[in-house]
Amino acid sequence: MLRVVLVYPEIPPNTGNIARTCAATNTELHLVEPLGFEISDRYLKRAGLDYWPLVSLHSHSSWSAFTAFSQAQGGRYLSFSTSGTTSYLQYPFQAKDWLIFGSESKGLPPDILQACTATLRIPMAQDQVRSLNLSVSAAVALLKRVDN
Image (cartoon, rainbow, N blue to C red; front, top):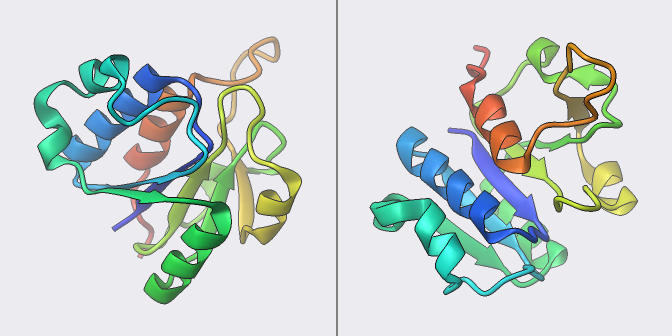
């Protein structure tokens, strides 16, 4: 099953909405600190509604702590970025892939992008639209089926 990783998320409602999507799709959610909010933030809880007990939530104190954990689990790191060269629609997802998203204001740092197997983009029909909201991007990525 695919896993969603949010690296340094900043906006509580985005993370709450992603948690809700992860609950609905039975997808693990991994948060890499530092976070731009407290886990107890009321906006985070409100966006996730009463689905938090259904979320398989994992928190990691740093990128290196996350990589130590994830390497033991196996799977590829697939980052999502506006600078991605491959459309996520054309990329063959595998069941153990980690879908990695960066912060709302900065995206993923270069060292994390370099650690990934691929950097994917979500194509936009309008050139003037740079990107989608973080929670929408995660939902769009999760809707893609794993290729067998």
